[in-house]
Length: 237
Image: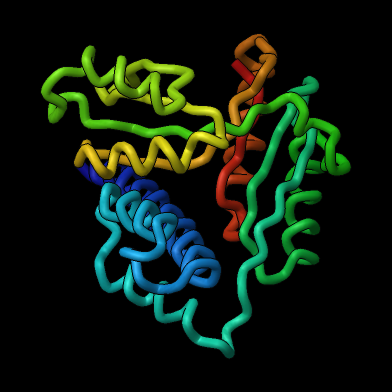
């Protein structure tokens, strides 16, 4: 009985850790959006989109409001968005999006993770060409009246890829320059969006044996846990 409880407790704490990290990341995104476009979601579509993302993962309303207030505090230092590049073990390319108020700390931490994980932090431009920036929209399929008809409409607004994930959500991807246009169309049509965000998709992939892939994923996990890291992308298949 005791051991079962410990296993459940460990899973529970791991889930809380993931939620806490997610809320921290979204809080930074809210602050950056407010700094760039103001605190009113009606007049700031980026902020409106991020708040919707936050609500989809049950981020408490008071945390959303606190992030907006922090961004409006002129005495608070602003976050700087920086992309870092590197190689995980076995030549896997890694792209890391960060939001930091101390780039010196961030780059030192990332270098440490790469060195300990058997990889290396690379110079700007070393691996970015292996990724394509796109817009991704996750839609609730069960709330759509006619997904097939919608697919035809989405093509007119820049859809390049259309699929379904393991949870049954529809995934719509656009070229990055069509991201805003697609987002506006979905809002006008009142189509329920679970999540909308720019992402990086690898243009070529690396396939590894299981034990080598595990080494890569362990490094990716370490990177994702860092407080300054927002997203980690790689080309491991």
